[in-house]
Length: 228
Ligand SMILES: Nc1ncnc2c1ncn2[C@@H]1O[C@H](COP(=O)(O)OP(=O)(O)OP(=O)(O)O)[C@@H](O)[C@H]1O
Ligand SMILES: [Mg+2]
Image 1 (cartoon, rainbow, N blue to C red):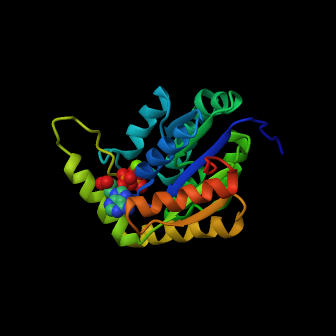
Image 2 (image 1 turned 90 degrees about the horizontal axis):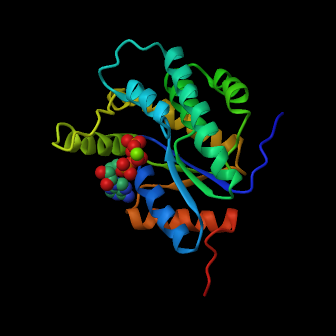
């Protein structure tokens, strides 16, 4: 199995739509910078110019009748570009890369939600991503109805705003059963790979969740160690 040798640290954020990934990624980035870390914040799908075009296609509600396999392939097309252009160079420079969603999202949404199973996702990760593994994955666990409702509320606030935010609601229109399968698939990954994946309770306030995440990052990666 080819392995990537890198000097930096690769941390991914995972969880259902609206569980608070972007909010917490930003807070962790700020905390790590305060401790002198060189942090790169990025996201999937997207993170590159080409990836952002793929993101628009994937998340826009105007994209109809996309087959599950085409969806899977597009997720990995964006990821392969992102690894080559952003993630690997940053890790090679010793940076801490914080990424909003990575292959676990594909295993949870396309594998679990769309019922394609884990096998094709892991096979594509092997072929297209050389099996690049995060040093740590924060899986933010939350209540299905609650987080999806939050994401929808957030999107309805931004939709049609004069700031021209992109329409990224395609997945959020899925059923509760779909998100139930996504959550179960995420939890199964955490059971399979406990050394990589830390499940964090995301049902508290943003400050409570941030404290939990910081503790996990300190304990597992020895980053942002308490100085006093
Ligand atoms: N702990 C929290 N309690 C209450 N509201 C929160 C909390 N964390 C985030 N929010 C709010 O919930 C909404 C969704 O949060 P955020 O965008 O961080 O989630 P996300 O996981 O990145 O969602 P998506 O997968 O859709 O990008 C935002 O409006 C955010 O301000
Ligand atoms: Mg987000």
